[in-house]
Length: 345
Image 1 (cartoon, rainbow, N blue to C red):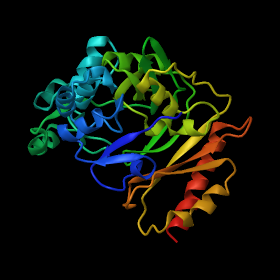
Image 2 (image 1 turned 45 degrees about the vertical axis):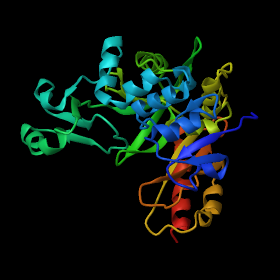
Image 3 (image 1 turned 135 degrees about the vertical axis):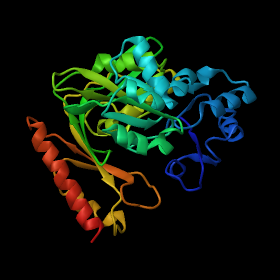
Image 4 (image 1 turned 90 degrees about the vertical axis):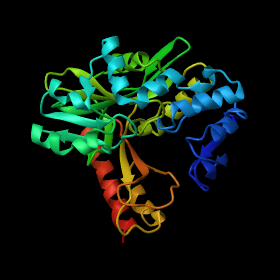
């Protein structure tokens, strides 16, 4: 789109630095953040863990307004504290598990879920507590800024890429997600529409721009919000190859205030994450094997170190005309297995 990009990374040689200009600095350092703000018309985030207070200090130092940041300061501060995030949903009437401070877990009852209020993701900072005894045993952990929330016996997990800015309000199609060991494993089209609750969740936290909204669907079909991320999201990577616009173009347009792009596509794609594996070699060993599967598209992130469980890339497998989603899911699994076997040979 002719845009010049600059990223801030705590180390040299990061993924973004391989394709565009980059500065090295801590992501919690107001001075480093101010360096980016002073050189960029708009600033956005790769993750939601950059401390809101550090961004605020950098805005003051540079004299920039809060509108410089997408997703907005209010949204960033609210999302970073999972208890404040839950309270925002409750205030807006958006269905979400009830949450209290961890010390008040008995108000929720057992079983319940203990979560770190700050910084948790992919199952990190999460404990399922089934009894009072388990709760007491974890006291040294939850006394350090955790929350307790209702345990949701969901039937499946859903996700929506939702976008709100400048009076625009739209979303990509609802997808179903499969988690393995708390990490997203597969993403494929869902047979339901969670658009409205996803958009309301973004609005509840004062969000501006593109958000990944993760949801629970109960056995009776009711949907509630798990959490949201103020950025392009793993569950939206399928949009790189589904035949319509990608979440990244939607994100860029929102970040710099361009008119939105209608997220319509006549086709679909299934996304399978590629995680670090024990004994992994050069990823190029697995590339030919993965691409022998019809419709497979390969995306590699350029991260250093393929430690087990780390998200290193993903495969999108495009659905053939008239093909059932289940069949495309199977082709995605086949492509990934072929990649792993060759990558670790």
